[in-house]
Every structure is written in structure tokens, then in C-alpha cells.
Image (tube, rainbow, N blue to C red; front, side, top):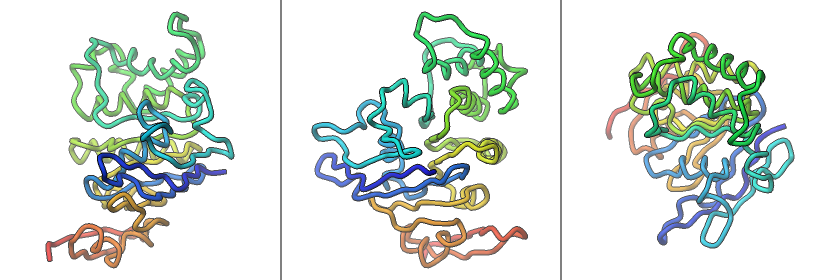
Length: 262
């Protein structure tokens, strides 16, 4: 079974944001979504997730999204949210919530707004906090945390949703190196346990170190897709990013790239 995204097209203001994009994410794999700024990464993730403003409609995107053979966009929002969790870039709230409160928002698809917290909800929240190593900060205000800690909270919120498919839009944005490695390491662990993840990432070396497969976008189109070692090669990277790259190999045969401006 797999996530299958086919022929996604989205034209905004006379520009093709997405132009015939296909994407596959097999179950239990971590797929990196790569590309320069403006390549269409966030737009594609929003379409797959079916968030407000990114669904089919007049002037909106077209294309198909299926998960385990089912049309995701044909499902009601709550049904879809029980299958897919989407953590947007720089997710924030103006409310003064504790870490546990924020993670608990991931349980919303399973009950009404006025319903109380069930034993299953509490268990899912505690498991998610443990998974991202934030149980000791559960009662802290979200506003008091560092950027890396907040990103782990939002990842925990997605995990508390108990999805089958996790979509992350630039989860390492503005984080230091240690926090970047921690966040993608957590996603890697989740996929090893059976979750499927599609993650938009800017840093090619982060993607090379953590992803199973990558999809490289350029100007709203797929420039290349496949296993990390097949896509992150100079013949592909140089043409998309306008650089000269050199690729070395780690002991476990993952690529490491260095760049220079031609």
C-alpha cells in the first residue's frame, strides 16, 4: 500500500505553482520533498493534506490523492484527520497553552469539541510526549520553550493524532543543527515503527542522512524522484540548484554533498 499523488496542477496569479506533479510514498518510508524556494513543496503538502484553501474547487488545484486505495479528498475532514496528520511550517498559537494542551489538540478528530478527555486520549498524549522526550516539560507554557522544543511539541501533536500518514512542512526550519537532527531522528524512528512520512526539507544533506526516498521539485514540476542515492547526484542537483556539487559517501553508503557557485 502507498500514498499515490497524481497529476497535481495548481495555477495561481497566472503562474503554475504545481504542474503535473506525481508523488509516491510507500508505507513505512520516509520521503523527503526537496527543491529550491518557490518550487511548490508547501503547496503540494497542503493539497495532499486537503487543508482549507487547497482543495478542488473553482480556481483551485486539480489532481488525485489516494491512501491505501481510498480517495483522501472524498473523506470528511474528521475521517481524513484520523488517517493524515499535517504539521505546517512555523505552527503557532496566540493562546497561552501548556505543552500537554497543545499535544492534546491532536486528539480532536476523535471526539467533539465539548467532549471530555478519554483514557485513550490521555494515553495517546503521554505516548507522544515520551516519543519526543518532552514528558518533563508537559506542564510548561509553549511560549517559554525554545524553537527546537516547540517544533518537537508540534511533532508530538501530529503523533498524538495517531495517523497512518504524517506530512511535515519544513520541520527543521530555523532550528540549530542539534535540533534539526533530533526532529528528523524522531521522524525516522516513527517510520521504523510503521508510520509513513513525507517531509519538506531544505537541507539536502539532512535529507540524504534521514530519508529513504526523495522527490525533487523545480518550478512546480518533478525534476527527479527515487532513492536518495539515485537522486542526490551532481547531474540532477547542479541543474536544479544552479551549483556545482561534489558527492562523497558515508560508511553506510549515504551521500554527503558539498557545493560551490559555478
